[in-house]
Image 1 (cartoon, rainbow, N blue to C red):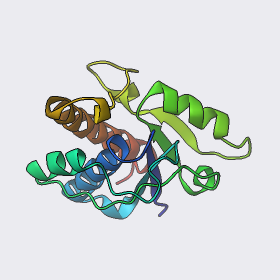
Image 2 (cartoon, rainbow, N blue to C red):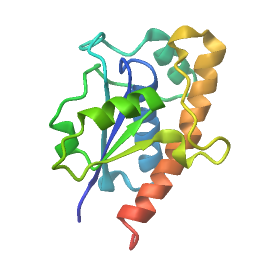
Image 3 (cartoon, rainbow, N blue to C red):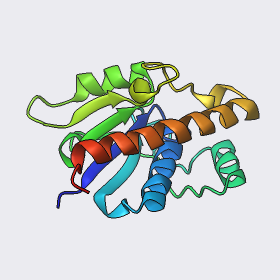
Length: 161
């Protein structure tokens, strides 16, 4: 059985994408599908490469019992061959991925909120520029959207299970 490989992508890989990755992993563990998925996160920028997630993201996640263990990195060309699906947090990063994507790869690109029933196609706001309230809003938004993504990918990639 093939494993579905998912890469979550934001700008710096220190707020949204590592939190989305942690949420997605938690959903797979809760649903008993962790063996069907591998995920990681990266940023389109290398400004924070090697850094730990933003402390506000870590504090917010920990307050909900969600653990994040990640070191920021930039999206690499080989990611388009290593991952089945690259999931962007906003239109800017999706456009960047579209420009980077090699022509000879089957990797699918998508916007996380394309599956969001409340506001399909909208961006996940970058909490870097906000306070604790925005980090909390993004936490709940990512929880909901990654759960929907998990359901979608599980049905699409592993329908018999």
